[in-house]
Image 1 (cartoon, rainbow, N blue to C red):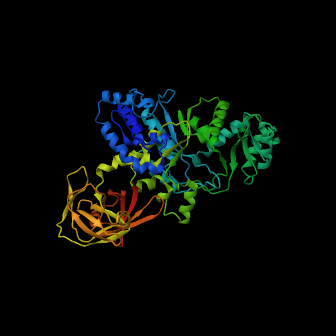
Image 2 (image 1 turned 135 degrees about the horizontal axis):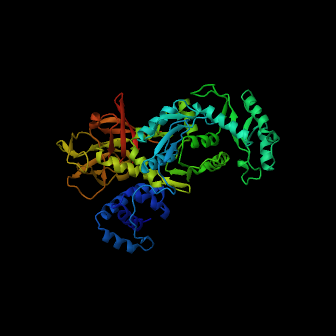
Image 3 (image 1 turned 135 degrees about the vertical axis):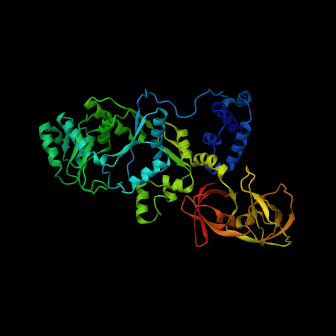
Length: 551
């Protein structure tokens, strides 16, 4: 399918809006015109070529160009690049980051944290980091190492927040105080009903018998709750049993858990729920803006219900749609990653299969690229699907100019040259946009098995070397000429070292790379020509280990 028309239109519009077209902004637009993810690799060079041409045009020429595109002929209004404006005043704004420490931050849940931080920067407000470490569920437990991992993730993203860090697990007595206030106001009660009884009551819009006791008795039941067995009692909010959403009816505010907490051990047994703790903290910490996922709508409604009981001013709450990242086939939830890290199935939280911030950093993704990727999505109201290639495109723009080029061959095959010629060492540019060169000694020649299979019997050019005609069956070749002809070009390696590349799905690509990579420094990012960008990890027993950044 030909997308050249759409690419030109969106590139011209992008150039008019921001002064210069950016290829990373064009790709996501094409998915609404039928682009399939398997076509991304093929379409990217075309986008980059068109963007390069578009950026040579004047504003007048861009407007003329847009007029040719029918439904795309929207002459762009001049606007300030960046985040959209929030709908309410922003003086002395206070935002919050509220990670639950069950694992490292990953590409999925980083979105709301980054948006909160970006808006705090935009309005010169404050950002608080509050570890949302109430006890959680059996299925989603707190991981002690997560506290440090979360701090590392924010540090990598260069997200600034006020010190000291706050921990909900150390604020439990504050929540107890307001639990008593709710009971005294006859707005909460201790419930001993089973889950089955509760479900039946909710379904039939029937009040629980536990709800009928007056506040003075409820306060005694609250004190008794601290000695009760796990699962024997909960503190519930009083709502209308006619509320249209059964899940909103008499929701739990506190529950009993005997599990050990990583920070406070067994100091507390009665733990607040997310909406109870945040209803109190959002008021006490003077939070003015809350940006959170649309999966927390009912929790927001409950917070507002509690704020109204205490007659507290509401912060501005903005719900943003969830994001599915297209192109991540084996993305794991934090709870699943936690289990597999503990079991040893994953090498650690920086294993590429977790898609954690640590893994992205180790692969060579730049924090600025991830922040731009999230900024482009913005405060989407609906759930959206964002292609991972959009992140890669942002990252490619940042690392391309500084990434030297080297040769790598997957599944190598030695070529037997039938008419060998004496070849002096050749000079190869380390980067197409720089004059610097590297000398390569040409001895034995290796190409990939894939290229031999694809071009056998045909004439091809060995990059920067000479033209050859491959044998029909065996890995042989004859030198045909030296001039750079318009024929397929393939990569090759002469003197080499063994090389492994770890892919994001955990698989390993094995091959050989030119001997020059022996001079690389740890964590250096480079491009294996016609393969992709990689980050050097280490050398083990003569094998050079890399992680794939992206193609």
